[in-house]
Length: 202
Image (cartoon, rainbow, N blue to C red; front, side, top):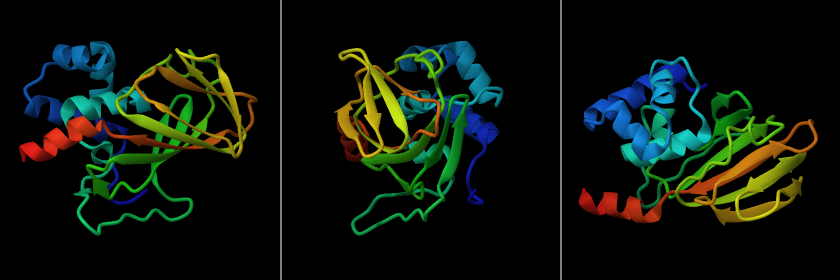
């Protein structure tokens, strides 16, 4: 892990600092994100891992880039800027049924957020239920079989080499379809309207 990467306790502390800086109570942030007060309290105290869907909603509510949760030195994207993540690298991020590597975390305020995820959830309940996030999503199966659950369609099985692009605001969940290794590349887009407004306000 890079020297400037944050562990789960540091991510929780960072979320709490952002919340207090913006003057939000736990109740207000819970109401805005749909994450319960109890879960937020456990996340802030480092007693619970923050899930990927929660990160999307917290980033939106706290007006930060997802990369800011993992590294303290991310810089805004400027003309000609780039970020490189070497093979097998990335900032580790884990929840009970998913192990992820967050890619290109040295750039902040990106229009896209790339992850490599290993999915172990066997049911939608394991995955934390069907959850939405702002923006759009591109998913490419690297290894194994994935079952993508959404509210608008029947569950869709995707195999290595398959990909899908969809509206992230449609509640969805990833499930491992065959109990073997299931690894996916996920690229989510930011809420571009919110991002443009934030940049224009500065």
